[in-house]
Amino acid sequence: MKHLTSINDLTRDDALSILELATEMHDVQNREVKKLPALRGRTIINLFFEDSTRTRSSFELAAKWLSADSINISAKGSSVSKGESLRDTLLTLDAMGIDAIVMRHAGSGSVHQARGWVRASMINAGDGTHEHPTQALLDAYSMGTDLEGKLVSITGDLLHSRVVRSNVLLLEKLGAKVVLVAPPTLMPPGVEHWAAEISHDFDAVLPDVDVCMMLRVQRERMQGGFFPSEREYIALYGLTPSRLARLKPDAKIAHPGPMNRGLEISSSAADDARSIVLNQVSAGVAVRMSVLYHLLAGES
Image 1 (tube, rainbow, N blue to C red):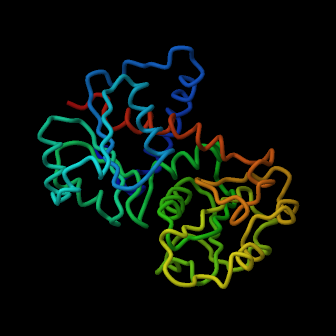
Image 2 (cartoon, rainbow, N blue to C red; image 1 turned 180 degrees about the horizontal axis):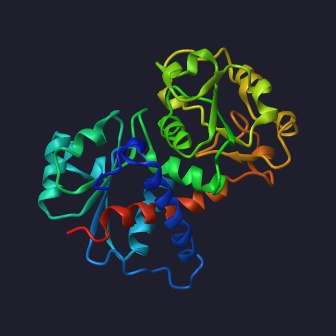
């Protein structure tokens, strides 16, 4: 495996191997000294053209805990802000002899295109509204080891999400059933061809799910009215206290973050004992350590 720009880069066995190793990497977080020598001498650049807290910091920690050298570059601190093209920026970095580039960019498909320009391994940390493969891996890791036959609902702003596509692709590989829940205006184009059921009725889906994943309403990407009002959105698609009570006792509540508390998810749901939101954050470092190891360990 040379790159990870899409879940489609992984076979089922690849995904299971990454998740299995992540379990071992997770133990490192509980050690007093959080260091493994696996990637000593490797250099990884985190190239982020969009804001990020969880993804960027977890990739940086993952690299450092594997003893790799990690360098952070943002759009404002790069020559792109002076008019340099993305291709020239990547070629410049690649010419320095680095081993991997973790990139987040607003352009859908940009990371996949970039892998054809460079020798280094490319890792997609989110490209527009396309994909976010490591997020899907850490979501699956947090959901549990055996997802075969489990029902996972993904509810919210699917249209502007890069998480949902990666999750659907991965969960299908792992044998889970997925139902996508959103108003028609927030369904992605072509969603009827995805390996998932589609529903506009959250209340009808809720009692049967094993994992209830909520997605953030991405106000910053919205121009125009995708729903009449926040109050109506909450009434129809928010994980409110009343809906929380209708979940199965052993159902899990997930959210890739950041959360809009009081909009797509209530504080009572976010802080419920069944919530795995903080587990997802913790899993982020372990899963990304596993990804980096699979891509770079043993490569010349």
